[in-house]
Image 1 (cartoon, rainbow, N blue to C red):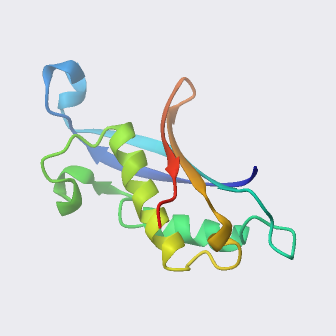
Image 2 (cartoon, helix red, strand yellow; image 1 turned 180 degrees about the vertical axis):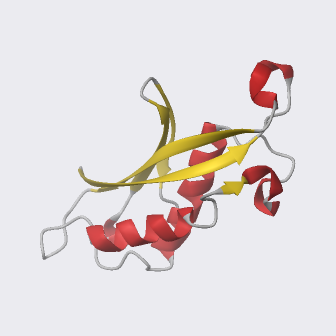
Image 3 (cartoon, rainbow, N blue to C red; image 1 turned 90 degrees about the vertical axis):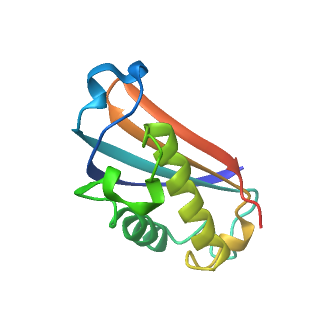
Length: 134
């Protein structure tokens, strides 16, 4: 299996509901390093999994509406704790939709799996990984 991984980051604010979260129930900020890994069993005729430049641009465009925002105010997260796990699935879904619509260009038809990882510090990260259902 071949893979290509691209990276960006977002700076957000949010709060959590539930005693499990202790002081994180209060509004706080976080900076996430976001990695998206794309998997394909074969390469294109040009010898790539996907166009890395288009993958970078697509990830950046998906993250832009979240960057420097209070996620508690965004309608797509209403009633949810925007944990690292929830955000990784949200970004995965947005990237999957971009793949299906052809935004990643050549090679995207060969993609079978993807993983989105959000690193919240040098000691903690969470991911969502799944097959790409078309």
